[in-house]
Each structure stands twice: as structure tokens, then as C-alpha cells.
Image (cartoon, rainbow, N blue to C red; front, side, top):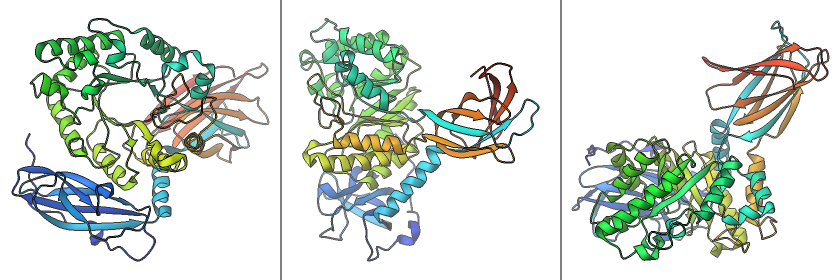
Length: 524
């Protein structure tokens, strides 16, 4: 794959930046690096140890590469020296130029998140009420209530939900998207070669379809041999290819158009099971080409861990961006990127934001797909870390959805992180989720139209129920959809009185810029 070789570094951002003697919780690090003596390698930026890695980049000999990342400081550092090193510990000559540093307090970082949320997850709206002749109605009482969210926010589920009304109620109250924890994986669906078992998966697909819950298809095959069927791990060559191809076609044809995404070959850059066993460096590409042929309208996701969580070697942001572009050049039209988000080495929101920034430039959907925090931190720190991760993801304009990895099994437990106990009482992590869901919801707003017949509000994107009552007219209800766009979104509600109790017809005209949408509703 050819890349344009950058001959000179750009000038340092922000004039280079100076770390002053004030409270520092977050540090942005940006610089340009160039290597010699080796064709290419992964470089990382660390302060002392691997646990304090702040950035990675794939550098190429003789070319300047941009490094972007930083550090979240939970405690004072015992060193102020940044190290630029080869990830694998090899001796490499590294030149560093145009270094820039920026510091932020906790309050400053949070203020930036809140500003970003206001810009990308909310929108200003103006509702104007008129009579059937277009005359604007002043003094009409308005109630605006958000009834659904635009941003997909969900949690994994297990088959335990099928016969547990409490589980179902808990999920439906909070979440709008899901993924099956294990029920769609190859070992579950083909426990013995040639013997299919989709009984549980069928029930779960029927459940989410009946309840209109968008669901990710996770996963078709898995690059880690530990998660291949035990009987398939020692297969090689054509026999493995036949079984893997049959697995892909069987599950995708069975559930065609049932899922919003497909994770085709899970964690493909962390491992190389199929490339090695099939002796084919293009094995993963061929699986994606087969998947596109079977279900061409559904985005095919690349999904991996240690991308947004912490520094990685094989599974790094540059490696996956290169893989996405390789797939696109080879005809894969609908691709997506899943950042799993299993946080086992603390959290570093600066690093996470830098990774999301890079992926956002590629032009494919990017989701946080399996977010959890290790139980080893204890429940309080686990919850605190979870909040930081969720805020960072929700605030980032490049993130299209978030799924938490906290499926509840039949015993009432979870893999690493539960949001409830077995009786569906919140854990501390569950309290965090409920707090954020409330914070990221407009709720109910009330007021009166002004002299222009207008009522203005700022709300989270989604659907709203609008109730209007004027002293000289009867009350009525309608729904409007607050969607992404530039500038305020205008809704014109034109009423026409009907001679029945509780009866009004209204026409809602939603317009922003040059786009106009008309919705006609009947009696309330």
C-alpha cells in the first residue's frame, strides 16, 4: 500500500505549549516523529512504564508521522520525561520535532465535553403556532416532552431475558440497542461439525424483532482460536475454509436483514488464526467479500479491543485505518469500526479521544461496542471509570452509538461489570448509567408562545410529543423529530379548529435551511 511520504514536519500546534504550575489532570501531547534504520514500526509515547502510554503511531523510514495522544493524571508523576520508543523494544533512531503540550484541569476537560455534547447531541428548536389562516397565536401553552432518543445507547443481553419479565422491563426502560453476549457465536451455533443449533438464537432474534430493538450481529467468526469451536481449532487448509465459509453463509442467510451490523471476523488484527491456518494473507478480506455478497445492505464491522482503551501493537488505530482502506480498495462498500472498550488498564480519556479523532476521519460508522471496566478496580472505581468512558464517547462527534458489555446471565451475574444485582437493583455502575441517561434526556419543558407565536428550546436529538393549548382553542397533541442539522430547527404548527371535544387537526412543517418536511396529524 502506498502512502505519501511527508518530507517536513508541520509547525508545532498552539505555539508548542508550556506546562505551567497549575492543577493538571489531562495533558495533550502532539508531535511529529521520523525513524531511520528500519522500514516501519509502531512507536509509542510513554512516561515511565507501559501503564502510562499516551500515544502510538506507525512510523515509516524517512517520513514524518503525526503523533497525537496524551495522559490522564490521577496522581502526580514521579518523572517529567517523555519517552518515544519502539513498541517492541528494538533499537530505532527516532527524530522528534514540533512538540506541543496542552494542559487541562478536570473542570476544563468536562467543560469541553459539555460544549461538544451541546453541539453534536442537541439542537435548538423553535415551535411556531398559527391558526389555519397563518396568523400567529400568542399565549398558547406549550408542553414539550422527549419520547425517544436519537443516539443509540444500549447494553448486551443474554438468553436469560427471554423468560424474565423483570429483565425485560429493566432493559426497555433504559436502552435502545443491544447485542447478544454469546448466543450468536459459532461454538453456540455449531457445537459439533455439521450439527447446527440455532434454537436459542432464533428465540432471541424473534424477541428483539418483536420489540423493535436494533441489534448488532456479533459475531460470525473469531480470529482468536480460543473462541473458535473446539473441533475446528486443529483444522487446516481447505477443510477449515469449507467449515468457516459454511458458517458465514448459514448464519447470515438465516438472519439476513435482521441485524444493524455484522462483526464478520472478530479481533482480526490481534490474532491471525485464519491467515495462518488457511495459508492465505487475504483470508479476512475474502470473508468480508463473502459477507457482502450475502447481506449487502448491512454494514460489516471490524471489531477489536485495545484500541480505544490503551496502547497496542498489532491492534492500533493506524493498523485498523490501513485495514479499512485496504478493504475499501477491494470492493467492500459498507464498513464500520467497532471499538470494544474493555478497560483493564485504567482509563485515559486523552488517549481515547485521540483514537476516536483518528477513526472519525476515515468516513465509516464508529461505535463503542463492548464497554466495561475490570472488576479488579472495585465497585467504586469501576463506576467512576465507566462514567469517564461514557462521557468521552457520548461527547465525541465521531461516535455513532454505545453498547455496554454487561449482559446478565441466568445466575444473575455478569462477565466483568454488572449494572444491577440479580433482583435488578442498581449497582454503582448502574447508578452511573441512570444518572447519564437522565442528564442526556430533555425531559418535559413548558412555556407559552411569545408575540411571534413562538416557543424556543434546546433539546437532545430525538422524537418529542408537543401539546398545545390556547385560551380560544381546544388542546391538541402532535409529534416532531429533532434531528441533526445546522442552526435552529423550526416547526410550524398550523391548527384548524374542529367542532368536537378534544379535536384539532394540525399541520406541522419542520424546516431547516432549504429542507422542508410536512407532517399532517389527525385528532389528538
